[in-house]
Image (cartoon, rainbow, N blue to C red; front, top):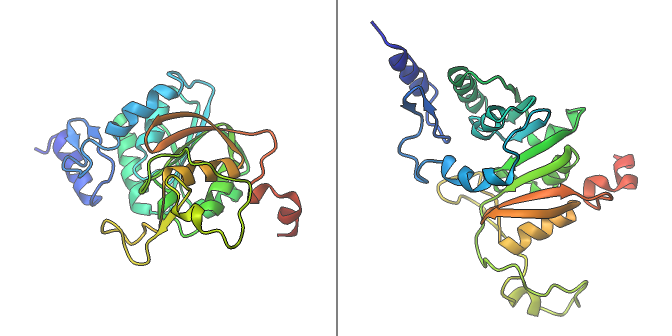
Length: 251
């Protein structure tokens, strides 16, 4: 007779390779992950910056993958949690994890570029592990910011100079090339073919560029709980592309 654990093990295997490592009734979904116990290993540094209890809060998890973060928010009592992803297999993994963990969340097959189709804002928006996979990352960030009522949790892979304290002037001469040689100047790296075996790794910023892009998207950085993650609040008068009223009205 097949045990419950054996059935879960079979279901986990049928859903292919997992990027999120869960413990589903004793079954680990990604026990040999190259990053260790991921994303728990990163989440333990981020989670103290979020409310311990989330009753009354709505959550949007963009690019949720197998929904580890969405489910953690639901575990904290969030009233409504929506996870979106453009990959149906990841959503199938998320549904299995939610079922086994007995946590109810909504899941939707949706591109980040379709965020405008959501007719609501969310108290907390998670935009984690998505930015560098996008052909149009700043456009996606601007769309995400429009959905934030209280906080955006933003995480991206970083490369290059770790410092973000370079003096950045309001403007530069067309002929001045010195800023691009300055340590800590905002830079973003583009990969034509692949990075780390993944052809969807398009853009990777350094820390200065990540923080600059968050600010230009109309956000104030309020916490930096670990090297690749920022907690941000929307400013009263956002300045980002999507918030340009005249341009938005012409689209």
